[in-house]
Image 1 (cartoon, rainbow, N blue to C red):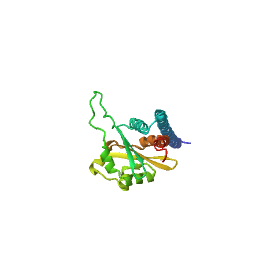
Image 2 (spheres, one colour; image 1 turned 30 degrees about the horizontal axis):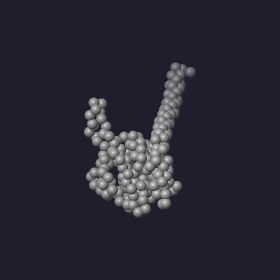
Image 3 (cartoon, rainbow, N blue to C red; image 1 turned 135 degrees about the vertical axis):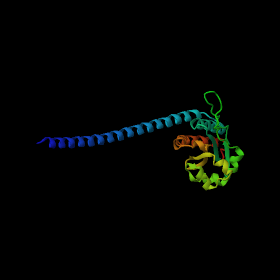
Image 4 (cartoon, one colour; image 1 turned 90 degrees about the horizontal axis):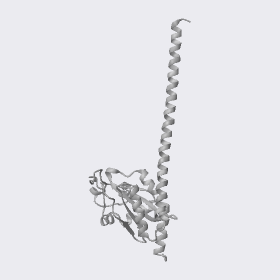
Length: 222
């Protein structure tokens, strides 16, 4: 075998080796990416479990509906920064709106209030936007509704102002019956994420049971 043949064979071997190394590198990248994704998902789940445990611990022992909703709203706002929380609870032919103080404006390292103030809607504004028919439609949907969903169901109000809002509703259900829903909203510059809404949705089963129990105490004959 002459030198040219040896050189040609050597080049082929090196080329095959490089191909194999690239394949191995791709497999390693895929494994690393899968591992990182699984680790991130695990951390998110741990965060949800921690929030759920803290939430249930905080509402245990509440004796009345207003205290329960105030505590639940505060915990939700602590979990979703700069958000406002309101509770719409169904009545026979209408609904009850429960809302509390809005979130505190964030401050920078010097203690100055930041310019992006949280969006806050007044009670009257919410009552004007959410008619009994709209509340009923949202309850019947029994799913997380976006602002677009709410508009499709009949949401009304100041469109210019509502366009500055990122909002979603999370259903409250007990034994297959709709109790109402949670409204969460904040500035559209900081849109609500699926992860944030899923964290709140994780505590809804226990919260719904607690609301139903307090309502039974308030109206034992209903």
